[in-house]
Image (cartoon, rainbow, N blue to C red; front, side, top):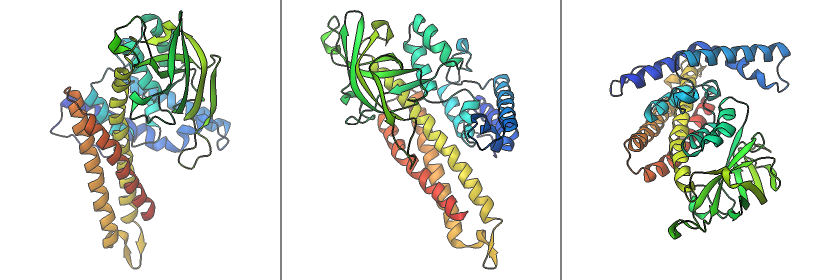
Length: 362
C-alpha cells in the first residue's frame, strides 16, 4: 500500500497514516493468509492456529508501541485518544487489509459501545461493563433497529421500557442487533417514560444495558445478509425483560443523543473503511491489467479496461472527499445530518461499482 503525505492536512494525521501503513505493509499484508487461522474453522492445522495467534499478539504489541491502539478510547482506558479526523484518516489506511481493525483494538460494535460507556456510563457501569469489554473478557451488541422502525429513524422505535420500582421492564422486537450471538450484554434503545421527569422528556429514548442471559431475552435467529444463511446480526424479542434501573445509561430521555454520538461518527468510520477497501480493489485491478495479456496485448491497452480504471478512480475520490467533508463538519461542530445521509447512500454504491469492476477484470 502506497501512502504519501498529504500537504493540506496536519502533520499529526500524516504521521498516523504513515505509521499505520508501515504496519499494514510490513506485518499484516505478508501474513494475511495465515492471520485468520486463529479462528480454527477447519481449514488450518493446529500449527497454523498457533502461528496466527503468535503473529496477532506481535502485531498488536507493535500497534501499542506506535501509539495507535484503540484510537477511540481515552488514554486512561488504554487507548490512544485520537482526534476525530485522525481516527477517520487512519481507518482509510487500516481498512486496506482484511480485519485490520481487530489488530488495532477498534472492532464494531464493541468500539461504539465503549464510546457510549465512556461518555454516559457511571463509574460502577464502567467497572462492570466497560473495563471487561476493553480487556476482551466480554463482548457486546447494539440493539436499536426494529422490523417496522428503520435504524435511520430512531424516534420511531416502539420497544418500551416501563419503570416498575427499581427495575426497567423491557418489551419489544429488535432486528439486526449487531454481534447478537457472541455478546455478553446488549445496549438496547427503548422508548421510556419518566413519571418524575419534565413533561417534555416523557416518551423519549433511553439506552439500557441488558445482560444476554436475562430472562425474557429471546434470540430468534441470525438475520441472513449477503447470501449468508446465517449471521451475527440477530433478531431479538424482549419479553418482560427486567433489569435494574442502575443499568440505564445517562439520564432518562438521553438515548437519542447517545445514539447520534455513536452512529454519526460510525458512519464516517464505516465509509472510510469502504474507501480503504476500494483502494485495495483498485490496486488489484491495476495489477491485473498491467500483467494480463489477451488478444495480442496487455489489458491496459484496451480502452474498455482504461474506462474501468478511470471510473473507479472517480468513484473512490468522490466517496473519499464526500466523507472527509462530512467528517470536517462534525469535527467543527456543524450540523452534518444531511451529509451523513448522503455518504450512507453514495459510498456503498461506489464501493459496489469499484469491487464489481475489479471482479470483472480478474
